[in-house]
Image (tube, rainbow, N blue to C red):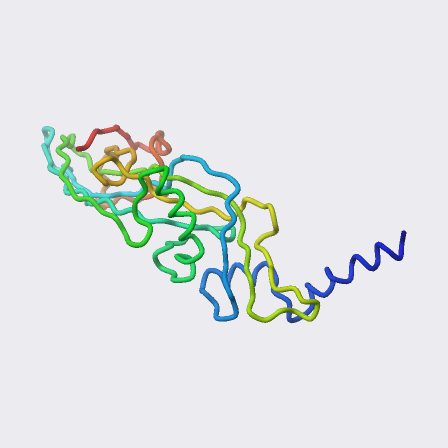
Amino acid sequence: MLAVAAAGLIPLMNRNNASAATASDVALHCRDGSPLLEKCDFIQRTETVTNGNSFRVSDIQNNCDGTEPDPFSFDVNVRSQAEARIESGAFLNVNGSVGLEGVFQATATAASKRFKITGFREDSSVSFKVKADIEPNTRAAIYFRPEVLQDGGYLEATYKEAEADGTKVFFFPERDADTVLVRFPLANDNGDPKGFYWVRSMQCLSNSRLVIPNFNTADFGELTGFGVVDTPISVG
């Protein structure tokens, strides 16, 4: 039994020699579209509709010196794009990498047959105006939280040249994992990015700047208690 077990370890040891593709190599090569690759595929295992990262979509308006509510008309521009996370950390813009576009093309094509998605090959955007009253001694801006289709899986990389043991296929992070994530923004029937909008307001500060932690990125209601008021709004 010991001899059989030892023999079974030999291919695994060969995969970890100095010239073999490590999991990190696979992630890097797939992301950058390395010429060493014959192809790189995203093997999807999970799929869910969830929320993407929220962000500010208008200029900051102020009524710091006013004594009455001031009716402002906000110019809002919302851009959405497909994002991927192939290693721990932040999501990457799929449109910013030729390699990633190829990796996730099949997944996007399949998703588009079942969902109305937007922003894969290029950014999708929409511009509109939102009218809101800004209270005295207050600053405010419009925020957006996109609704996204999030698929989880792993990368399967096939290299042009085989290793000494004949191995050409390697994985990130491992086979049958679901830790590689790709987000496709969902669209309304008119093609605009789908999601949730709100007005974020706070009292003017002495230096006339918005300087609370994560002001531009925190989700709806997360900054309650910092003197921030989030109010949902409807658009369109």
